[in-house]
Image (cartoon, rainbow, N blue to C red; front, side, top):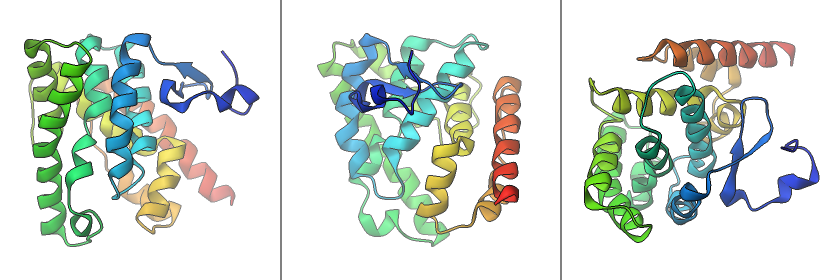
Length: 214
């Protein structure tokens, strides 16, 4: 495995994400087709950098699955595809600061995600039963308080990704916030699993030290 700062960082980004130690990690071959199919949808989202965010969610999910007994074959595809629905949300709703419109946009992205997930996974060889399971996990990642561990793990991975370095500073830019202001928002993030909470607390402390050292 090579350092992210080395020349191998020029590898096709569709096949990699960043591991816990900052190295490039190669995504399992069986998920690469899904990731590559997801990228065009993620790039159409304008609320923030959804390609960067999704890489973070995949990274978070991999870390959680090392400690939690989730279904990887459902959760990695769910992590890859969970925000593809933003590709069809009207631009004005993606860029609004109105709370009611933001909520409407959130609901729309879930609605649109279902059909995109169905199409992408059908083309990559998933059967209807597995597709249904993955869609149900994705649809539960907003506005729900699920009991299923798999659904909870996607929520935790999505929330945990908020505090990884690349996304944290990407969100500062997307939402026009100073690091300290975003830190004060992110420190209120909630989690279902203790695994996610421990990783989050460590990463959040790193972000705090970074803006204090500036």
